[in-house]
Image (cartoon, rainbow, N blue to C red; front, side):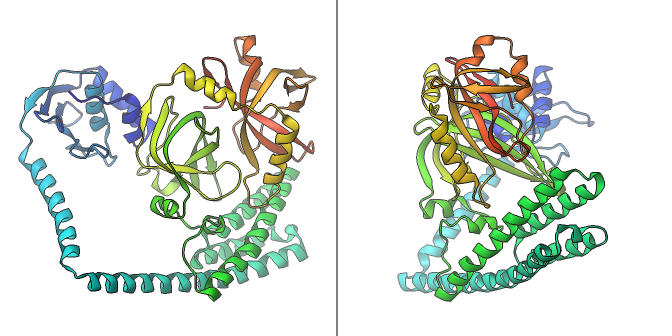
Length: 486
């Protein structure tokens, strides 16, 4: 009988609520009939539900890496809770009778195979010369479309540059009142110029000025200045980047971070083509959190991962727009080690974003934790210098995640302070971009967790105290990962 782990099921789920409901269905014996094919590629169940008739639920494993769940229930979620419940029945080792693969399932398989064979056949019928001509024509058309798009983006950047120059001359205070409506219209125009990245920055600027008008808190004004600085830097650098591309005629994809900053969306295949990928990577998640980005109108599920081979800290980011929450799968905490055949990394400085398509999640072993602890930095002064060089770039993330070895964490007045074996210290604090977690240190049940351990922390610059601080996320002991943020 087939084996499937709970982590694999969670990875397929559209959201955590669907997982919880699926577990309830399986636990209370919701399936009145369970069957599987003799070749172990097809599983089917009859599940009682709220309708008059039982729901017929199935999972087709004909493609091992991409099992397909189907159900007769009216849910728009995919997979639905019944499909996930059937997977939990498999996970629990329930008894499945043997059945034939239904005719409609076999027809779906045959149609899919026929489409694949047809596509291969059409390509095979072309001569090598015809294939080359077709490929060249396609490449020429794609290049022309890219050049046209880049020219349009340059027009939009000219408009954005004029807007920022006027703001810097007149002052951010001129954005207030009825003027905000005008800037909102300008933001919409940036979308028409294929500039969703600059558009989000302008939206962020509008939100901060609007908030400052309401409560008068200086932190909003300071945040607006930071956004304006990034907006201006992006405009200037992007104009030079796109102009060079258009004038040289070389519009091929490269590893410049400006592509994404302007709003470009990377494909995994493109990242692999430009060399931004690694094979056979083992990644372990050390922290997980969910933020809402008002300027994007999206929830962002973020996982912080460590490469067990190199110690590199990278981030997974799952964007869930408000208008599509029902249809975009919600990510969740992962407590195993992801064994990834091919991991693609986004260009950029600091902690790079990482993506992959399919991974095997294995349990954490003691040796994994020992490896992670060895990656903890022991010199705070040198690390702080590197971090400052990274975050001073206006286009870089304002926070940097790192593993830090420490001798003690304790209170100094009202603040928590980390001290390493060399006597170097750094104050702990709550970064405005993350959920507060510093005070949770005082809730830890065991004092040994604050002695001779390794901390996963986020370095950030506190504009109020004018100093670099460290936001605590997780403590790595000899045997466990204690998450302060999850």
